[in-house]
Image (cartoon, rainbow, N blue to C red; front, side, top):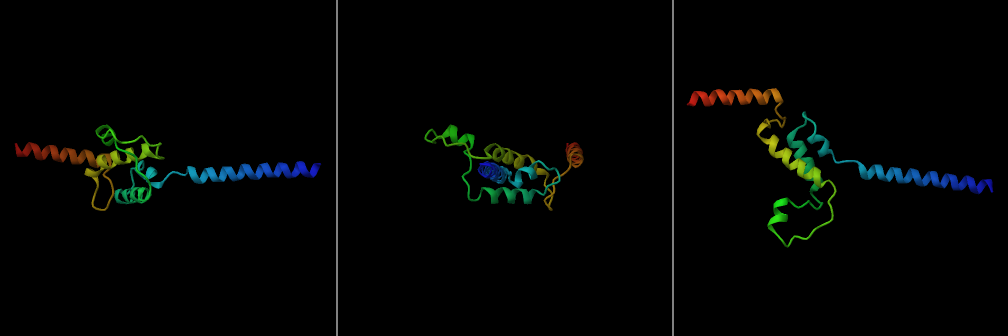
Length: 125
């Protein structure tokens, strides 16, 4: 009797550990999400990681596609759909401040660029 309780106990521990390991593998977020939130990231590397992740996956529908095409069928939610759209916005917002080496201008550099542009406009008037 004690042996059977012992085996049942270890069986449940083994199952719970297996489930935990499987969930950790599935829950690990793609690297492009953390790169998007890092101000010191390389833009070209982040875009490359993003494209590699979505290369063989179904991409979420854009809002204008949904509203313009009434024949679009509702699909089940795509994992990381919010992050997908957030990355596209980040890409548009950051692109003007990308340097040749892929680094993104710091807030101080952005202010300096704005002040220089402001001086240039005043000189051209």
